[in-house]
Image 1 (cartoon, rainbow, N blue to C red):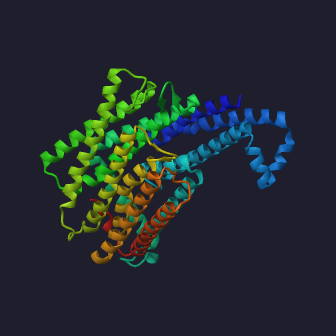
Image 2 (spheres, rainbow, N blue to C red; image 1 turned 90 degrees about the horizontal axis):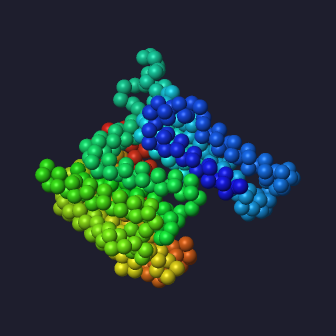
Length: 460
């Protein structure tokens, strides 16, 4: 019964998808107004907890008063499933509170609201804290604007909260403008994210990640989401390549076609229960589609290389210098990810002994977001080029050191969760990158009251 209740709870993902993807739709507003999905989850919880109390007795409540009792209770599979439904119900109740409050007052833009709701879905309290912090910044800005003339601040002085809010608002505007300009890449990216969400719903409804004989929905989900994030990143980077109009049109068309192919084949084949690359159960057409996936991977790497080369050739002495330098480091990291992908093709899978190539694959690609982030923060802070470049070099070297350490651990056939000198080096390198990023954020926050404007130019 408890597994059945858990599977039913998966339908609540529909409510999350509506709030995140279609927040302004009248159907979404009606569903939120009725609290349909939190009520649905709460009813499932009531059924489960009543059955548990009838079986175990109310005395089990006493075990929630100490850590040992909680661990013992959650070791019971039935109780753990009911507790999970408990979490799902309250996470969605918090999401409804955020949605209703923001649609009434519009503290933050709807795209940012969707990001906060994703954080609430994945890491409940993190999403709540993010929204409360952003709401406080927006409320402070509105209060400052509403002050009467005789008590208004001196012209030219901006509070720290107002400066940060202005910078965040300008940054969000610049990102959204870039995504609108590259609407073709953005549309395919959103398709990837939607397919990933559909796979997540399918896993929740079916109660299993496997589709016989060899399909694995979780792999399709992570692949689709990764492609979506990658394309959203490319849409922000491609203006820096300074392609000609014809060159950009050709590059964009090939990128869209290749990405559509790999998304459709990856998700479609797994939905059919087949491995999209190395199928042993499929026929000749499926083998050809798998070969196409290999060619698609090569195409993605070549297209990225074309864009990266155009960026690398640019001089670093302009206003975009820090960001261009960070993208050079990010390009090296991304090619390490491509190398990890070909490594998986060579071994026809992701396993090397007890280890997995996937962490290296992911770390390489995320360098394309982590390193430009440092450069953007330093640009917003107005830091001199020499100092900014030194910090970007430090962040880039640290990130690549982490990738190299993860590759060392993987080649030894050991999982990244196992302690070793390689993983100690990887942890130290990632901490070094985090320290540089934190210093960059601190410099931006310190400069925000005086100069919120650079946010727009850094993302233009």
